[in-house]
Length: 428
Image (cartoon, rainbow, N blue to C red; front, side, top):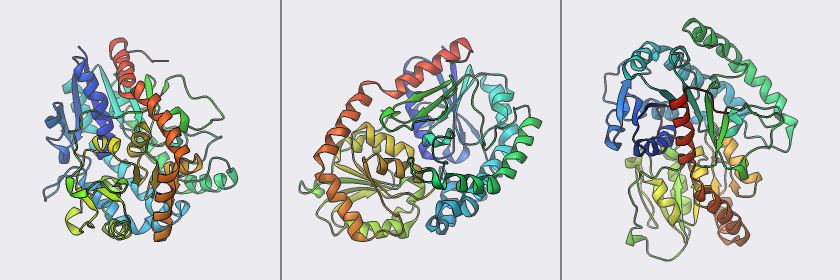
């Protein structure tokens, strides 16, 4: 039996991804623990895992809920999401990265303590920012990248966070120039901190290292990007990573049986924009379809229409097999889970890699990308109706789904992580 420690970012997406893989490893008899923010206290214990708790910020005087820092941050910066992605580099991405860097520097002494206490055979992190204590520990560690694959940069693909098309590089250089101007000095300063605390220097344009042992990213082969240069041999693609730990979901009888069944989720963070959620409810409430709505952390601030049911939290992997279409913000979990279950998507990106996922869905013809804050009601309802009527698309998605479900990514990830824990050597 190995001791395997997961360290996901303090948000539900990366945490849920790690839960799915951790559950497989736990079933195989391994000791599985999670390093979690104090706001998540008890959340992972309820799923049967050990918890080692830490803080990314100084203690708060008020009671916190899981991921509250990022919910508040997204709420307060929501006006910036109406800007073009190149402008968001300054107004949203730079302050977001600074908050992430501040969290990493603040928590480092506590992470050193946790690693010493748990004595892991391998540490598995799903973060976008480096933590010095991991490579400095001398223990094997694995990086999971549960974001769009553009996070793994390459000269042959669009810049990450840009939402630019893969087939037209005209605007790539301009975006990278602004990326370097806004984020380059921060990366250099952060790299100095990491070196001073026993970690390697950061590569250019990166806030996190590649693991010398094993790196995993989550995206199906059918949607992945054609790269100019091969990735390092330690990179392995997981075509999917869908957790099986969620409770069953039954469609409430109040929805009836007439009309398509559609799932609406803007994720645990983007759904904090009540104005956006209310507009979607108003537009979709006039359609003949039925909706299951993940209402998000501000659930009590708006009411659903008569053709809808929903709650703050819903067991997404249990719902997706039951629906005909998904309306999503483009978070990597929801996008890859929708492909796993063969569902077309309307994507309304809000921040981070959601623009990249939205563009990829659209340019592959697997769904429609719309302007989140600028769409006309007819654009949204028309996209829904076109996708629901597209029999060719249904067949394409069914073929992708069948292949993904025949080879679960959580099992592949568990196999590879086990090998690192057992051998302490890189996995090529």
